[in-house]
Image 1: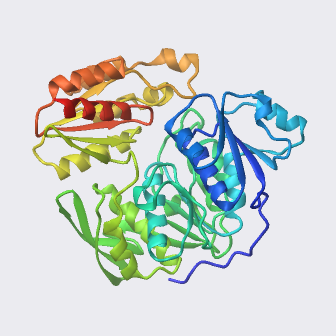
Image 2: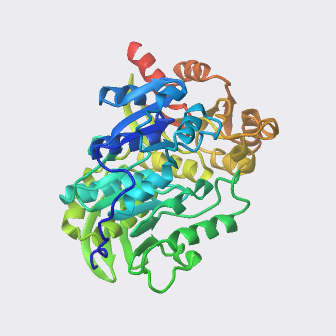
Image 3: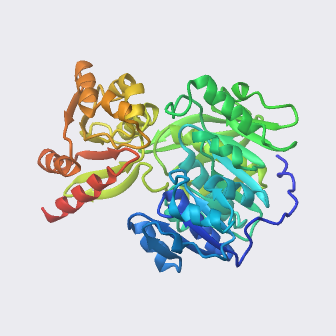
Length: 469
């Protein structure tokens, strides 16, 4: 494949040495952006409502972080005030910036401005964005291209989730919520998959598909779309955009001869019928074969040699909270995962079932958003209806209205799972979940915590208790 089209160097709205203030700096994406801007040479400050390990790490790296929201936190010489999606117009720091005529910019807009300077690889899709963007960044890094990257999770093999590199590539996750990915300026777009989610914002799957079509249309002529072969026709890319379809058993870039070796998959990759050789993954799950294929497609387009990709893939051990193995404690192996959609739940459970056949599996699922729980209640019930014992704490609320909160509960989900013959238990508080697991697990068992909230506390607290036994 040919390399990506050249992008002219432009002046970013944020230059090295500029002062910039981030409101809501403790969020995963915002903290990553703060780190990236600091590496770029900006003088970064920020504020958040409460302390966290992310804030502590930023402070240790030299970012001046303030707790609480106060107008005085905004330096009058700031070139921009950047806000997360959760920050409202009546925020005192936002109002201070407006009085001082300092531009207030959304997180996604700043990422788009930075991406406009370089060759941007934007990774979108309903599932797998973090794993896939991490994998693309690692393939480029191991090829010596020193890419910039901004990833919604920690990536141990890359030393973190954000970096401003000296190369001409910038890998970033592209979130479809509120159509924020329409602020980006990519040269390559990866779509991992496409299905209904964020139905608190979108009215239907058709509306989601339309947003993704608008996103793909942001590619320049000669830009590249990499996506599963069944997804590309839905996106209707214009003729001047190059397309690379991927798939297991078919597509322009195809995985053939797929076999599982323990928790890993091995396969041969064919590009337009040409055999690129045997590939092996370290991350578990059949779904990660597709993630690896789209990442491989983007790396090939960037000029990375297939042999380099083949050597690098087995060294990718995954991103934090993506079926992350915390270890084995008193004979119990504990995993933590970000799954919060029925499709993700099924993929996680299938990966563990395939990789550890015959092992008893305890799952802890913390539903994320009342609206998502209500809309996918039956799908979640089906996902947990067999082969696993699941404990469900209260819903982790985010962007939920009072009507959403009143419409569904974790107890409703437990009842649906039981009605389908599954084994489910409702334990409201996370500490109570740890108590229950501590008394239920035995040596040889597996435990997986799943959810986009703070359910990972259960995994870490259980590990500590088992260490003491």
